[in-house]
Length: 335
Image (cartoon, rainbow, N blue to C red; front, side, top):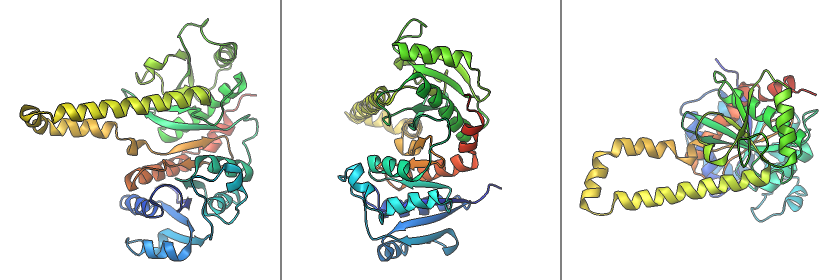
């Protein structure tokens, strides 16, 4: 049986909070009893909302916070508000009263406040934002997705290690295979920084993962590797491009499936396969970006997700803790 994980929850972050957050917790508790939630936000509001769900007292505690960080707050202005649900949830992890913090709120504020409160892992040069992407076989870990616009070769090496550690925490029976995202698969391709990172990763063998060289953008979803490393500028563009392409294909598919009587009949006949297709690419099931490089895991749920998506991100919280993510990073750092 897995150990009990204590999750600090910023209940007031994201769209439709705290309803989405609390209904997400209720959804998670339907199938899991290995967790305790410390829920941060205005006490009366949370008590009224929780009364709608069949929460058992043994699984949660409310910690009252007067203030809320808004989506339009700048990271620096948000960091000055120390009685917010986000700040107090992060501080709870800093003080080791919780194992992991999750928020669907202001991304910039979450990262700045996390860095102010939680120490960096020794010998990790910069934090990185990682997320799950489906591939043809299973799942990819892709990082960095926006925390660092510019990176040097040491950053790429750290990202490879942290991405592999995250992959092994989430999928412990799989072998982690790391690749650098580049404009070509040949060693001569790319800028000098990525070439240096390639040579360093090739020379410094790490028992946590296998280094597989370069990967081009059109092969990200092939499944031949499962940890893809890039800088935050390139990674964020790749992410937004993939999201836009998926939305375009989904919209066009819907039009084709319901355009005319014959198409509707065919759709009805193939409804089971279409449901499988939909579930495979449902972004709610892959919700939960991870801020890597700090002494405690920080999980960012998408602000516009629903209770299903938030529940999925809670699963990421539990797996990063039970999978000993931080220890895996520390034990495999090669100086």
